[in-house]
Image (cartoon, rainbow, N blue to C red):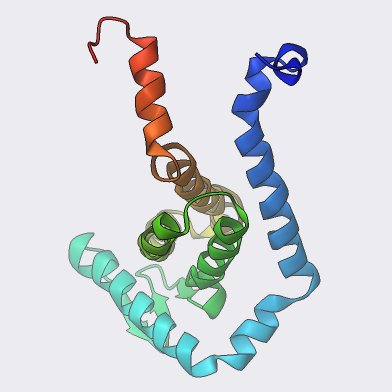
Length: 195
């Protein structure tokens, strides 16, 4: 083992990926907020976001009304629930911002370019679907308890969404970026497995 390996405990190397992810994501997401890129993005591409919101709100309405059986009405990107609570989906609710942020994070993160080419569209689709599920979850919770909308939106469902964002990176780190190292370490840890 080299001198660095003797000085630094092995547990640090397990944390290295998480620390790198946290550093890159803090810089990208923090820079995004400081530069007010939400306003720039949504103002420059209004037609795109109008279509994206329309697709996502109609899909969410389908799940709310037809799958879950909550009698809601859709009008102008607003879903009105039976208790007369209205949920508006705006461009920030589409998950597209998080898709761009994950793209930037993975672009800066080590890994083979060929794997990034297929993983980014797959993880983007997962993020957009999870943003719709986030909206559906909000509708279900608000239908039962409209007074706690801010708690449900700002704390519960947002943290669930960020957990999915983190899991997208975790899948990249553990299974996509370097899957051979996982197979080799698994073989080493199980001496009964023959090679």
